[in-house]
Image 1 (cartoon, helix red, strand yellow):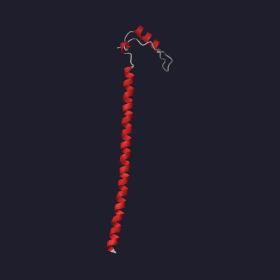
Image 2 (image 1 turned 90 degrees about the vertical axis):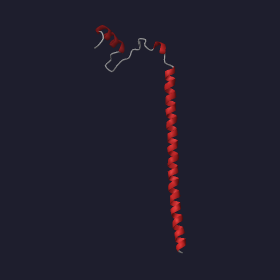
Image 3 (image 1 turned 45 degrees about the vertical axis):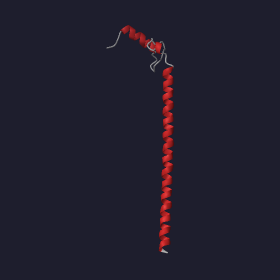
Image 4 (image 1 turned 180 degrees about the vertical axis):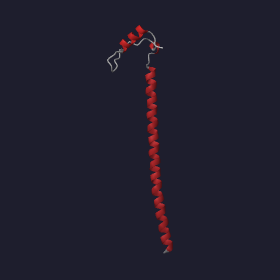
Length: 91
């Protein structure tokens, strides 16, 4: 009778330990999957960055920008550049 109770107690503890270890394993597997997804995203970001670099026009990178941009005050970048040319360089 005592031996049967002890055996039952040990079986219960073993079952609880197995349940805990199953949860630990599931969490570890999820952690590995998350890491794999993060690495894939980082790799894709790097590829995108390098692709953008590959398409840069390096021969004309320092050419005067002719793009006209308008800021929130309504002043265009062309107007700002003209004003800078009139007043000279700022110190």
